[in-house]
Amino acid sequence: MVRLTASERGAVSFALRFERDERFAAEASGDQLTFHGQLPAGEGHEGMCYYGRVKVMPRGGTLTAVNDGLTVTGADEVLLLVSLATDFAGLPESEPLADYDAGDPALKTAALLEGLPDYKTLLKEHAARYGEMFHRVSLTLPRNVNSTLPTDRRLAAFVADRTDADLANLYMQFGRYLLISSTRPGGLPPNLQGLWAPQIQTPWNSDYHLNINLQMNHWGTETLNLPELHHPLFDYTASLIAPGSRTARIYYGSEGWTTHILGNVWGFTSPGEHPSWGATNTSGAWLCQHLWEHHAFAPDTDWLRTVYPVMRGAARFFEDILVEDPRTGWLVTAPTTSPENTYVTPGGERVSVSPGSTMDDQIIRELFTNTVAAARLLGIDTEWSADLEALASRLKPTTVGRHGQVMEWPFDWDEAEPHHRHVSQLYGLYPGAELTWGRTPELMDAARVTLERRGDDSTGWSMAWKIAFWARLHDGTRAWKLFGNLLRPAAVGGAIRYSGSGGGTYPALFSAHPPMQIDGNFGGSAAVGEMLMQSHEGFIRLLAAVPPEWSEGRVSGMRARGGFTVGFEWSDGKVTRAEIEATHDGPLVLQHNPASELLRREMKKGERVALKF
Image (cartoon, rainbow, N blue to C red):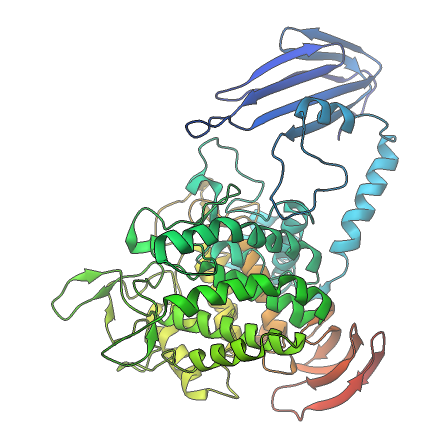
C-alpha cells in the first residue's frame, strides 16, 4: 500500500503506468491497472506466469483510465494498493503461506485486494507484525557528532573518524530488517540480491551460490533472534534431496544426496559448468550445518527427528565417495576445489582441482560429528553412527604450513592469488567451531597468520566474513578495522565506484561486491553479533571481541546455544550486569568478561536470572 498526500487540498496529480523491458502487457480499466506475462523456460516446459495489479483509490479529484495507464488529477490524497503474484507452486517440501497458494496469479492478485481494512488499520497491523520480530534485539553503542548525519554523509565521515560506534548498531539492525523483508516461513530464502534486483538479467542470475553466499545470508538468524526466518533455508535444503539423490547416483554412483555450488528453486544440483569452481560437492553438507545450529540454539529432539534424514543422507553420500589418498593415507574427496582459489604446482602451473581441500575436510568432519551426535540424541543408528565416527577420524586434520598458515590444500602449495577473496581453509574458525583458543591454540595462531597473508582488503561479503574471523580470534580492534573497510563509501563524488578490489557500501547501506550483493549485509550484521557474544565453545562468552570504541553499551534479546536469551550492559569494557532467560532446560555456563571464571548453574525453561558483576 502506498499513500500519497500533499500539504494542500487538490494538489495530488500524476500519471501511472507499468514498464518492463520484455514479455509483458498492460491494461487500464476503471480504477485498476494490470500487467502480466510469461517468462521463458527450458525446451519442452512452459515458463512461469506472473500477474500484477494496482488499485487506485483517490480522495477527491478525477481518475481516468487511458489505454495502458491511469491518470489522477487534483486529488487530496491517493491510496495505491499493489498486488503481485506468480504461479510458482513453492518448493516440494515446504508448507505454503496461509494467504498464498498455487493457481491463477490473476485470481490471486484480485483476491488479495478484497476485504482489506482501511489504511491506518493495515499500517498498524503491518507495523505490529514487523515490529514483533524487529524489536526482539536492541543494541546501544557510543555515538558522536556524526551519528545524526544522513547515512551517505555518515559513511563518508566514518572513513576518518571511527568513534561513531553506533554505526555498527545501524548496520546490524539494517541486516535484520533486510532479512525480515526478504523471507517468511513457507517462502523462499533470500538469494544473492534479496528482493532488490531491478534488472531482468540480474548479476549471477540472482541464484543461490552454495559455497558460502546463501549460507552467509542466514548467519544472523539464530544469534540475532530471527530463528523462524531460518526455516525457508531448511525447506530449500529438503527440496534438494530428491534431485540431489539422482545427482549422487548418476555422477558418483553413491547413495545419499549431494549438491554443488549453483542452486535454484528448480532443483538444480549438478556440478557447475567449469571444474575450477563447479566441482565443489560439499554444499549440501554445509547446508546441513544450519540444521544442527538451529537445534543447538533451541534444543528440540522432535524437530531434530524431522531433519535427521536430511543429515543422514548427506553423510551417506560422503561415506560412499571418500577415497584413501595413497600419498598420505587420509580419506579425501576427489576431485574437489577450495572455492574459488587456485594453487601453483612445483612446475609453476596454476591448478584449481585437487584431492581433499581443507574446507572439504572441515565440513565433512563437522557433518559426520553432528550426524553422530543427532543419532545418539535420538537413540537410533547406533552401529552406523559408530562407523561414521571412525570415518571422521580418518579425514585429514587441519594442518599448519611452512609459512605458519593454515594449509588450504592437502599439500603446502602456494596460492596463485595470495589475497583471494575466499578464505575457505578457515571454515573451521567460522562459521564452524573446529578451531578455538581452548582446544586448538596452535591452529588459532595459524589462522591469524592466514588472515594476515590474505590481507584486510576484499569484496563486500569477504570483508564481512573476515570480521567474523577476527571476532572468533577475540581481536576486536582488527574486527573494527575490517568493519570500516566493509563500510567504506562506494560512491565517490556522486559517482558509484565499481573498480578496485571491492566496492564497500553504497549510500543506502547495501553492500557492494561489486556490484550489489546482499550477503555482505547479512554477513556483516551477523559479525557484529559475534563481536558482542559467542557461544560455540560450550559456554557463553560476553564481550567476545569488542574494540575500545565500544567501551560502554547495552544489548538485549540475543540468543545463545543451549537455549538462552541474553542481554547485558557494560562500562569501561567490563560487563556490569546480565539478564539471561532459559528457553529450554539445561546448564548455563557463562564467562562475563575475558579471563573471568566460568559461572555455572542449572536452568529450567522459563527461568530468568539477573546477574551483577
